[in-house]
Length: 538
Image (cartoon, rainbow, N blue to C red; front, side):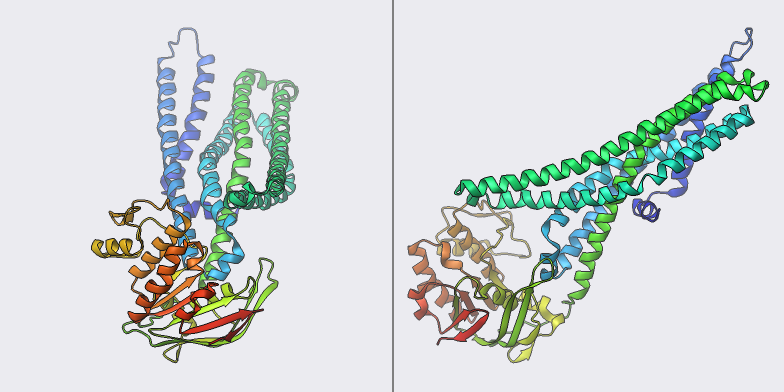
């Protein structure tokens, strides 16, 4: 019930008008049945013109009210979905990087796509269900007008059927929760297959294992979904059967208790038949309510987790980069990386290092040595568990990391290349053209309407494009993670012998993670990492 109230709040519809249209729609349907019943019992010399007008009026009222209901529900649903998506996107944007790693991509993708679509698809069914519920009430009152005994029987039978139906829903809630878990697993498996398609192509056994995992997740999702649908099929048939029994009671049992019922048996039976149709629609709408509540619960739970993560990361205080900082210092920084289950999987030992303006610093080390963890700390993606980062010997406080990141130009080893120059205003096209020429990309790509004409380039060329974007930020600190790894020998030499010295000469603090020992002479300082510890080589 709480989530239904939340649904009404999120819909942002005119409730009074919505309820009036809901009542008019149900009342017009009841009026239609009443007019038909009156027409069946009219005198032979009665033309029935007045009843025909009432019949036409009831149809018009129903059409107008029902159309207004459906349009308002549809518009409200799309507004609500847009607001939910916007809220999730804002929370994702504000959340701490480490928290996003723990939450994972699959729940976020699922929330803004599948869960949102579920709400969009099922809300019209919920509106129909609400209308049918009111119709049942009005029809029951109409039957009460025709026969008190029939009304009592309908009421008792309805209370029993609804109570029996509700008591069987607890098992279904557990199944829908299990479905959410298996769907997240399926999303993750699909993402893994798409992201690792190159690795799959080069290893037949790996491809078979990935496919087997995907099939397993798909089968689990299918099995859980089928169990839910079988449950609802049983509930639907049971509900229909119960009210067919009710129809038989009204036709064969009620006349045994009253002599006057024979006069209205046809009218009451027709009203009961309409009630059965309404109950069928209502029974079909209950799964829609359940799906919508599940989707809305998942979205709100995800939003709460993201908001909590955003609240933990207070990065709003300003940090001035009006002048070029002379140094970036790590003072005893350490960090423990936790996996999705919260277990410590890697520990960066207390680390001290200094990086200076106009100088080039290299960091080297083998796989698993801690370079990536250190890089995330230095770029401000994660906050150190202990120790401090200092600019010009002034500590960067936790609430200043957002501003600090704005002053860092960075290209990650697993970077993503946007075609548009997001976040960059008033970019000088001539400067972009000069950089494209410097990085030997003039014949491959151009800047048009604030976006690159293509990013369909080789891995090395895309990294050159990513570095150009980082340089356009004019950030005083430049950090590159294995940038030269994908470059051809020619441009690797250009990068180390020409590009890096020129960038340092402009007054930047330049920090590179690299394995290219033949170019270590370019660096002013070299650090080496091993087992989460860093030592200065020279």
